[in-house]
View (cartoon, rainbow, N blue to C red):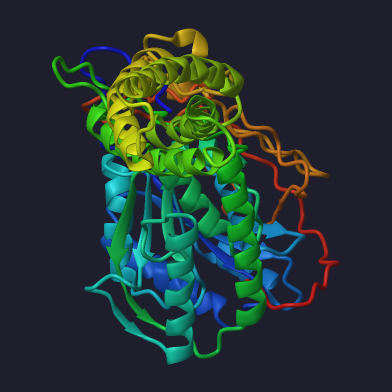
Length: 522
């Protein structure tokens, strides 16, 4: 469903400014659960790589998912020794919960994560985040299934990975190639709008995030990676696969019913060239024609089948009216969803009422054709009736498309009153937000606060994280303000703006872990 668009040339994202040395442009999150053995080598290797190759300031955040071994102590020691490392403690397990919580609290404009085993070659990190820094893409994922990827892993995991992605393509029409590779990045402004819609807190978090982003029209960049599987991985394949399939069913059901408010994500940044006002180029006409022809062809077959059934016990006029009425309701619903992209239940009754008016015009054409045939022949053959009806339906179809496009499902720019109230995306460029006026949050001691992202509601179901103690706790903050309206900021050219140091947050001490949940998740 198309949302607002403004005329003229719309602004595009610009390359993120480098910023001050103390302001991280990239925040790499490493979710861990009981990884006392692998955590330190991973962090030191990643830190060394970023120091040598990454041209911006960065931060490495260890997200501890309620570890019960020495992982918190290792993370605290690394935080004390390395200025670019921080430690984030959660008292509940779940990789999705860790990523959503840390990403929501981070001030870095580019957010990424990778698995602690470093199965992915780190040379792919800069190509992963570069399209996000330049403004070309909204999300980026590493792909082990790309043609140029070089992967070393057993046949069992290879089969499961390919089968899972085949399921995603068949059930959710996903076009990305690898949903489960633990190597992804997202722009912070996109995350603020997208993350509140993601429900899963476990391993399906990645897939759900990508499916929603793709359905909303966001751009996903894929990077071929070199991958060496970790033979000591503690991931429970059967349990993870079961939970993933449940997630596929839940998301597929929500998408089919229109309960997901993807309108709030549709083109939220005002830089989609398809929304530009270009004369003599009708918007979406080619795609709508293809969709309408497909729906029309199937509706015609359905109509002829119904007519043949009703003709067995009624006259031609009655059979035609009943068949056309039933097929018209189905045709309007199919065109509403597939041809004109209208999702959700809002306006469905009105659209059906307008569709019945269009049905009345079609009924007049087909009934008139049957009346003319009856006048010409007292007992026409059934095949002749069908031929006349097909010809009349072709004429009615052309008229139906024109009425659907101009009246029933008009361009949203010409029917602003039809715009759903859930749409928060606006294409009117907004002034660049003042970085200096966005203060850093202060984390008081005691229970940590809930984090609201943009217009999203706080995560009431997830406990707030606790920042672990350690050196270098004070970090300058102050990035672009949350995009409650979806407007895209303009980054000024020239020298990078200075991000003022805000009041240093006070970190609450690490709470003792009190959760021992079965299943080794990290």
